[in-house]
View 1 (cartoon, helix red, strand yellow):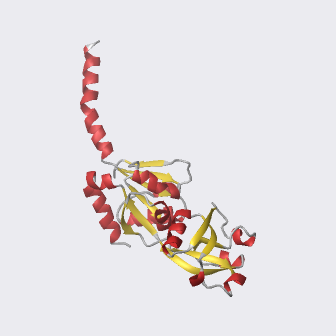
View 2 (cartoon, rainbow, N blue to C red; view 1 turned 60 degrees about the horizontal axis):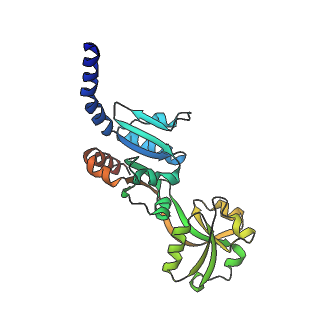
View 3 (cartoon, one colour; view 1 turned 90 degrees about the vertical axis):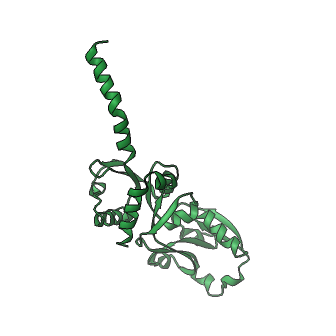
Length: 234
């Protein structure tokens, strides 16, 4: 091997640890698309983190800001806790409803106070006229949140048959699939248009910041700075 090639290889091997150290110093954040993404970008901007590129019209899923040593992953909302739990992302932005349903092993330090809605039980208006939730003993419910729903009603001593659906939950009582539903409600307009009424609120939902537990130790200073910065603006 020629001497110059040996020298070049030596130099490459010499700088590799520094490059790897720089990359591991990146903070990676998993964020879902939609309203949460818009609100998150606006909130991060308040603490000097520039991620406006995430709002661009592109199919890219990973964005990097080498100057600020930040990396962003665009993922499905339901996948955010998984990426954070397994360490693919150091931080994540996700709704409390997803956390209640999945019960992932992540640290949840901050309520970001946007994306407010309610997880509630609803039923047809005609059924609610003579219905008393206190008297429920055995019910059938359609929902996107089977684990949390079952846990909730079991804690109340109510036997519940869960039907898992992935969308248009309001349809289930209208066609006789279930008597009631558990779903998220913001304004309640969709329920009203489909002849349903709210019966009981299970939980109030907002968007949360979550952190990988190992990252909190290995990147403690940078992550703590982000948490404390965000805390001042929520």
